[in-house]
Length: 263
Image (cartoon, rainbow, N blue to C red):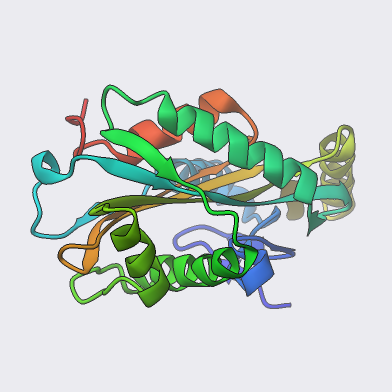
C-alpha cells in the first residue's frame, strides 16, 4: 500500500480504513501516521506536522448566487451516517449500530440550531426503494462538489428534485456524517506498538495511531433554481464522531460566514 506524504514534513499517512461513503465506495481515512525522523530536524518537523494536521478543519465555503437571507423554510432531509469501529489493529469495519447512534446525534445537534438555521421541518420517507435512490444521489452530489471544489454547474438530481417539489419545498438540507472510532483499549495498545517500533529503530521511524475521525458533509439544495445553494465539509482528526460537543463545534464551523458571522 502506497502512503500519502504530507507536504513539508516527513510524515506519511496510510489509508488502512475505508470510510466516507463505505456502502457506496467512498474515500478512505488515515488511521495511523508513519513518521520518518531526521534527528537534527526532529523538533521542527514534529511541530510543522501538528500545525498542518490540526489547522485543517473545514473546506472552503461554496455558495450559489442566492443570498443566505433568501434561504428560508429549509426542510431537513433524512441524514445518513457511516461510522466504522476499529476493534483490532488499525483496520475498522462499518458498524450499523454506532452509525444509527451517529445519525440521531446529528439530527439532535442540527435541530439545536433552530434559532439560527431556518429549519422548519423534515422530510423522512418510509419507502426503502426511494431512500436507496436518494442515498446514491446524495453521494453523487456531495462527492462531485467535494472533488471539484465548485458547485457552479452542479444540478440537483431527479429523485431529489421530485421529492422536494412533492413536499412544496424549495430548500432541502442534506447531512452526511462519516468517520471511525475505536473500541476501548485499542488506542492504548496501538500507541505501545508505535513506541516499541520507535525504540527498535532508534527513533528514526515510528507510527502514531489516529484515535478517531469525524467528518460532516452539509449541502443545501434549491429546487427552484435546480442547483446547489450551499456546500461545506468539516473534518476533525482525533475527535470522536459520537461526541455531541464535537459535532456541535463542527456545525458551528460549517455554517460560519453563512447563517452567522465569523467570530
